[in-house]
Amino acid sequence: MESAIPDHLVTTRTRHRRVPDDYAPPYPSYVARSATSVRQVVMAYLGLQHDGDDPPPGLLAPIDAALAAADGPGHHDRARGDGETVSIAYWDDPEQFDRWWDAHRDSWLGDGVRDGNGRWAEVLRPTVEEHETLFSSTGRPEGVAVLAEGLSGEVQEHGYWGGMRDRIPLSQTDAMAPVGEPVVERDGGRVRVRPQHAACLIRSGQDWTDTDGAERVMYLEEVEPVLRAGMDFLRDEGSAVGCRTNRYLTVVEDARPVDRTFGMSWWRSLDALERWSESHPTHVAIFGAAMRYLTTTGPSARLRLYHEVSVAAADEQYFEYVDCRPGTGLSGNG
Ligand code: HEM
Image (cartoon, rainbow, N blue to C red):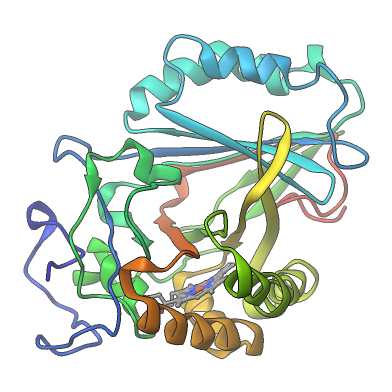
């Protein structure tokens, strides 16, 4: 059993873990292990708004070209939902990202490409102390974990409320409390947001590709509708619980949806995300069902779950929206 916190990020604690040293989780889970040379990653969510499910032909060509260009991301994927197609790109070298952004920002957000379709960028660059990952199975990394050297062995800090916090190295010494509020700055159809300190982003994914028979029916008929209700709640009423925006997206490959989804949401604080996950009836229900399922199936579970959670300082976040619908992301309703 390993700690989720890699050796090189272990520091003298001023804050305790939620569990005793001899805690044993009820089922196995794993975390991404990056090279020790990696100090900071960049996660860029680049959105295009359109009518219907599919984006108009050609509108993704500029971003596809940019993603394939020099200094492009080490990994990217694409997903859609609620009239948006989102390209999600990951770098493990912020300087490389900066060069890429300087070269390609205008092809996505510049005045020259404004055509009435909303476009946006939500970018964060957490240090390795400021983020964590969790995988219920090995063999198919997603998101930032694709950039890592590999997955860990079984880790200890999971299977209990507070495990997410305990996996973030910064939690050894810092409460990660939020400071301030985001400030929306509007210039016609262009909106920038001045970030708050310690905003929290979660990407929480589900992959039911490998399920069949009763397991697939169970996921699609019993779990997914509850997940969707939770995602709708966060999208429509999340502000009451500290969720600033939520998207429930389906991964697309070769422009077709596949059996993988994820929720992606920005929170006022890690604390607010913890409170929602441990108290909202939708997540409590799917958490309990998944705990029972994973405890029974162990490593042979065919439903795969993963997430990545970051808590970033104000200067590690960037939000820009161009001609977007009211209420997009953190852009406000005005
Ligand atoms: C943790 C189930 C979707 C937020 C967990 C855990 C399970 C679970 C079993 C515990 C993991 C561990 O520590 O071993 C599920 C299932 C989902 C789902 C079955 C969908 C089918 C989501 C979504 C979000 C979310 C979409 C947020 C937008 C969280 C958070 C934790 C968590 C924040 C960490 C709680 C903590 O450690 O304090 N979930 N989840 N989950 N989930 Fe989910």
